[in-house]
Length: 155
Image (cartoon, rainbow, N blue to C red; front, side, top):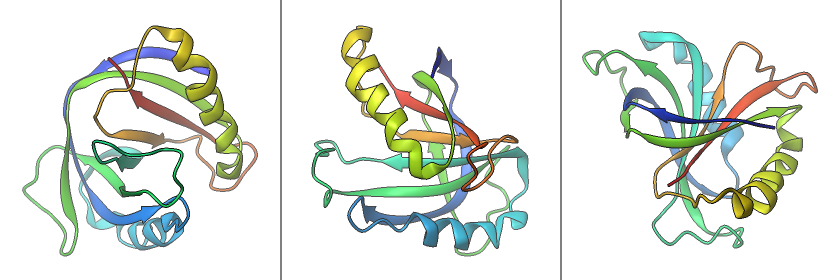
């Protein structure tokens, strides 16, 4: 599951966002909207970012706590922004990267490992930067053969 510790440079991203909570999850709605329009983005590659921005004192144990979720693609610049889409500048920083294999509905097992086992024993703590998943070529929506990388900001 654990892959590596990686420092990344800032990234320019374009996409859509929605406010939500785990109790009122709107992820499907967000991605349905994004996927119908993704070809409008002059993306650098085929990788997609599922990104979460949590407020400073976000309570991960409260399913009603609100956060912002984004569906994004990486771009070279912000010169051509499709109508009704928004820009996001992902700040540089250090991340712990994990591989999740299986359907998204099984993702909670990977997150339990990250936050319940790996993080408490790692010597790192969560940094207040966006969390994200990279949906690359091996991502197959709702398939047990799907793979995605989970990027957790650390310090």
